[in-house]
Length: 327
Image (cartoon, rainbow, N blue to C red; front, top):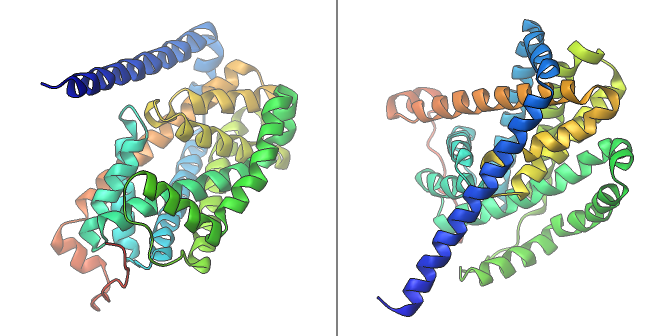
């Protein structure tokens, strides 16, 4: 065994240990927060009405559908159009992997699954990069709705979001995004794009990403109605808070599905309008609903991949061969 191999193995073990410690620290922090405010958390969760739960669940599914469309258009921007059925299968099944330590596993699995739809591994990987970038950009823009509460909590964080929004929008411009993707592909020793990303598909993907954040925010707003009622100001706050929270959860990739990170942002954004224990209970209820929806959707998408069901659900006309040029 060479010295470089030994060093590489030691680094891998160290990285795994660090991830485990971070995850453990997050779980302990959340557990202590719940314990210290258990009465409020318990009362908030147990008093949620059945119609609130149904409505919140419905909008999570709508948000997931919008996210699937964004993923589909990201592939289209690379000249690899695929049917909505295949896009849903790849995206929803891949999302289950984000519950592993390190949210990047969802993106890795999506890139592999999309090969079964006739898309090259390189195109699938690039689509992941594009989708993550556009999702982050749209989350920052939608997150501006929560800016007043963010200023109330931390001026530094609010100013940081304000500074990142124009930068992210510039990076999302197709010509700039194409260059950025090529730089990253070069660093990863992968072949660059042979054609620029298409403007129309990038715009559609960005729009669907923003739509998904709006639907997710409505889900949180419905949950808060049990505590503070349904108010327009609350809707705006919930949309912005959940967008920023889920964006932060993705960026802190060592935490499985951003656990703890999303909840911290949501609680911080809602605390000015309700007791922190109530906000924590709502954040945990939201997490549980998201988890159940993602598991159900992922399992359903996996089950519907059988040839017999697929032939009944997909249009009978033959699909045109993708015209992509990525190898």
